[in-house]
Structure formats: C-alpha cells, structure tokens
Length: 394
Ligand code: TTP
Ligand code: MG
Image (tube, rainbow, N blue to C red; front, side):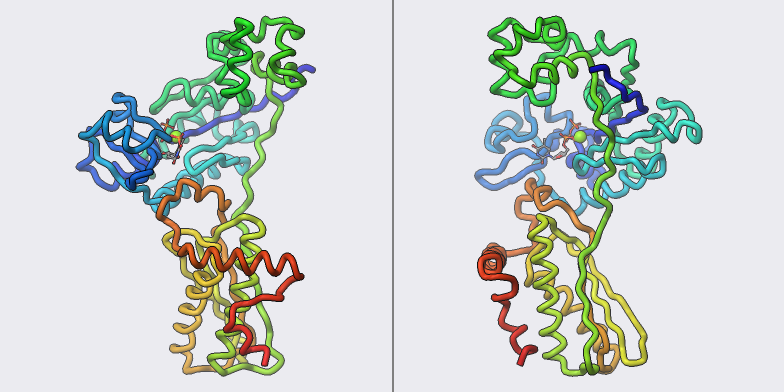
C-alpha cells in the first residue's frame, strides 16, 4: 500500500525539560550538571541536563547509580506543578500556529501545519518562529523535527538535540533512515530486536531491503507494517489532544437553603460524584470550581487551583468547602438557591506517574476512595457514601 499522506508535520521536543526549568528558576545552576529525580533510596532519574549526560546519567537510571557517576551534580526533586506551568506556556505558542496540536507529554507535541503555510510561510519558517518564540517567551530551548509525516518528524527532532532543527524532505528519507538501528522503529523493542539481529538485520536499511519471507518469522503479521516504517511511510494523522474539559454537578434546591451543615453535605455529595467520574475516566483535576446562586438570582463562581492534581473525594471536597465558606462569610449567610461544584484542568492520571511525592492526596484517602468506588460498582451506584452526606438525606 502506497503512503498517501503528505502533510507538513512538526514535532517539537523540549531539551532536558525538567532540568531546563530548574536552571531557569535558579541561574546559579548554570554550567553545572543538574539531575532531577526522586531523591529517596529507590529514586530514579527523571532527567539530567546535557552537562550531566556526559557522565552517563540519563532518564530512568537509579539515583544511587547517578550519584556514583556524577557525585558533584546538583540533585533536585521534581516540581511537577512548575513544569506543567511552563508546558502550558509552550503549548499556547503551538496553538498560535495551528489548532492541530497533539501533545504526547508535557514537553512534546506533534503539530500539523499544512493549513498554516499560507499564513506563516514555509514549514521551516514556522518551525524557526516556534523555536524563537519558545525561547523568547519561556526562556527554554526546543528541538524540532520537520517532515511530511509523524514518524519521520519525531525521529528528526531527536537527530540534532539540543536546540536542533532537522527537516527530512521526501527525497532524503532513505539517507536519513537507512543507517539507523532497527530499535529506532516504533514497536521494535527488547524482544523483537534480537530476533532481527539473529537474521543479520541491524539497521533500518537492511530491514527495508530484506525479503518479506525472511523477516516474517521474526515480525509475523507486523512484517509489512515495519517495512513501511523502514521506507518512512506513516499515515497516522495528528489528532488534537483532548481539550481541557471539565466535570461538574449542581443542584437547584426546592426551597432556598441557608443551613451551613446541609449546604456542606450537598457539596460533599457533589465532590463524591465528581471525583468518582474522574477516577472512572482515569483523570486528575487541578482546579476546583464552586458555583453559587442566591435567591435574587445572582450567580458567582469561585475557583482555585491546587499545587498538584487530585482525584480524591476528600481533597476536592476540602477545596470546594474552603471556596464556599469564603463566599458565605462575605455574603452574611445568604440562603442559596443553586449550589454546584466542578473540576477543570484535567490530566490523564497516568501522567502523574513520574510524580514522586507531588500528589496532594494521602495514601489513606486514595484507599478509601478505591473501597467506595468498588462497592458502588458491585452493588450499584451510590450505595456507599462518605458519612457527612447522610445528614442531608434525613
Ligand atoms: P524527554 O523529552 O524524554 O527528555 P528531556 O526533555 O529531559 O531531554 P531531551 O528531550 O533533551 O532528550 O522527557 C521529558 C521530561 O519527562 C523529562 O525532562 C523528565 C520527564 N521524564 C521522566 O520523568 N522519566 C523518564 O523516564 C523520561 C524519559 C522523562
Ligand atoms: Mg524533551
């Protein structure tokens, strides 16, 4: 099958991202090896700046090993909230050039700029502008890869790190790909690579030239797929990441409600529903919003962001309660016609995987939420609830 997609794709990957943000915030680190990661006995390296990489330090290396290789480095615990802030600044720049932005992680995205060429110039012009704007507005550097599909663009951004710009044009694909080790192809990992090696296939070029019957014992029904990749063909489209959605609950009371305990019980019930929906969708929220309407139909929303994401009922409830109490104080206990709470700034729960020690939720709260969720799943929704909400049901 011939590859049909010819688009203008740019892959952007920030250089030594966590470490670069630390350097930005503490200029005394300049020129020194900087290692960001878990500092406990079982910590691993999240990333190291290029000065530290010289000593063989890299992502996922046990921290104990890093300390042996590079004892003089500055060791820093990750500050995820800060990296998310910088990431949001960078992604806002991407969206100035195209709405087709597919984030892969905090520091990495595909951009389809095919429809932006008329407005901003060539693919290269756009890439240069993006790099310059990132540097001017965030103080960070990025490496960019340009190609007509995602697969090549991603390899290209990695080819000249840091601060790189590589454009793989259609005529240059084979020269670019052929010398690469087969492990650079997506999906060829620790199990498949040795099988190909046994067949004498070490490079992408060798895979491209190999007869399909030779590679089939190693690659099975993925043989054609990998040969397409080895020719630099990739039809996947850039799919914009899930927009920043929100989840919320609200209720209009039959009669306006003034009693603090009853209002808090309602808020707790809403926090439970919202957080259960978060957990069911494996999302975490950064921002909590409370909505209040008084009998005169004045509606206010109050929101606050947390230093880390959460999907815990109690954490979200505590935030909502604080927002509600501060409204109530300034409104002399006005009765409430409508009360609602919600969350926004949603992120995949898995993205918190690097997040050693940065969660705002205690292990006890997480366990309680799991128990509540599993009982509700087993016996139908809302059999189980945190005690405070029972008061409202009297
Ligand atoms: P990468 O883009 O893989 O690495 P990097 O930006 O630090 O360095 P470069 O791109 O210049 O090679 O990952 C982005 C961030 O994700 C990284 O700064 C830290 C985090 N990360 C981890 O926490 N653990 C990991 O195993 C990896 C690979 C990254
Ligand atoms: Mg990076």
